[in-house]
Amino acid sequence: MRRSLVAAVSALALVALAGCSDAADSGSAPASGASPAPSDLATQKLDWRACGAPSVAQGGGSAPKPLPHGGTWQCADMSVPLDYAHPSSGTIRLALIRVKATDQKHRIGSLIFNFGGPGGSGVTGLPSFAKDYEKLRARYDLVSFDPRGVGDSAPVECENDKQLDSFYAMDSTPDTAAEKKAYTAALAKYAGACQSNSSGRLPHVGTTEAARDMDLMRQVLGDKKLYYFGISYGTELGGVYAHLFPTHVGRAIFDGVVDPTQDSEQGALGQAKGFQLALDNFAKDCVSRGDACQLPGSTPQEIEQFIVTMLDKLDTHPIQGIGSRKLTQTEATNGVVEALYSKDFWPLLEQGLDEAHGGDGALLLALSDSLNGRDQHGRYSNTQAANAAVNCLDSKERFGLAQTQQSLPEFRKASPVFGNLLGWGMLSCSKWPVAGRWTHPDVSAPGSAPILVVGNTGDPATPYEGAKAMEKALGKGVAVELTYKGQGHGAYDSGNACVQRTVNTYLLDGKLPAAGTVCR
Image 1 (cartoon, one colour):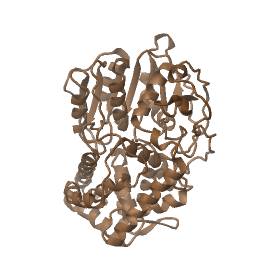
Image 2 (cartoon, rainbow, N blue to C red; image 1 turned 180 degrees about the vertical axis):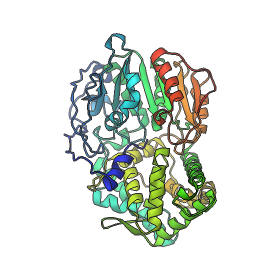
Image 3 (cartoon, one colour; image 1 turned 90 degrees about the horizontal axis):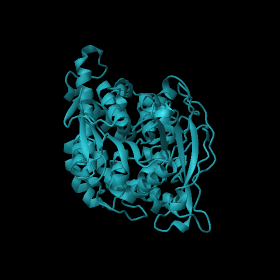
Image 4 (spheres, rainbow, N blue to C red; image 1 turned 90 degrees about the vertical axis):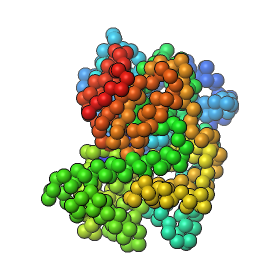
């Protein structure tokens, strides 16, 4: 999920982000000598302490503020095997965060969150949206973590900040032979930097390992079952966990559901359609406001053509961005993508497009920076590095230039605005130094406790169809689907009262909604 947008834009337009200092490195290289087996690690005691400010790798910012009613944030490190197949090869440490339940007498257990990505820091994500989960905190300790490879959990490191500025500004929709050569060379250089800086970690940061980490975490936290809230990629992680440990599943929520049946090309094509749908809805909303809409065009089609024309111009003529940085076509497209993650950000998208039309690309560039994890000091979190490492390790598909170009017409048909970028993005793992594992994950989970699967009909990043596919893939009698007819990525954090009430009722009381329940 996109959780840094408000901060990034505020840094540009309203207030400066609070400064932060790097935390001590908790993502150490494998330790020398023998390490405890997973069974021994299950009895480790965590040293909970007051949380400091997040590290740059986690996204920076200030230390999390206390919540009402004794809500003090605590952080700890948990040791896990680097390689579960060879546990004696060493351990790494995962960064955890929690806030205790307010009603300890009626406490159910720990509710573990994964906010998606892959690559999102749970240590920063949970405090950011904790107010949404106050009712759940009555009977659960709220817990999240940086999955391996992410944030302060043995983070994957690739290029430095200056190199990343160039990498994210490059032409990612090449038209000429020279541009294609430059694009593929940049991907190879990036993959080489990841190999040079993180070679010992790259084979061990997949979703399967993260799922095994969660089962170890369940044991360390003292829970017989895993109580889980997965959002976006967190639903894929949850599905893999349910497949590996079906009898360990307690009450679980999958929100903003990844389609586990799709290969990487199908997933990218689905996102092209999903973001195009979100843009259609944005344009319709703008037109419905008449003269109050700042964008040229009296129909949604005219507004979208205006956006296409602007992006085409930026391909050859970048405009002023922030400081000495220009707004390129790739960054402008990413800025639009970022703002479509939530309907709350539509006004920023409208403003950013209007200003870019006048030659000022600062706001769209700030939106792009938010997507890529860049703060106003030019420092990058490791979100995108981790995203690449997990995705490329999970997927065994490696697309070549000819195959990618052959698929582009279908992507462009799916979305005139996003198809080109997402189609060329299929090359992103082509130079990766570690082989992938699957075409799509196995999430079949016979014997699992019921899982509430929540799909949003207007979700751009994980299209609604993914919820039905997940329900079917989990197996008969495992999943119950809840439909939210809304906009933006995910459902619970939209604030919709019906969704939150239904989810809370299951997590707190164990009562599932009737199959086919719809929230509006």
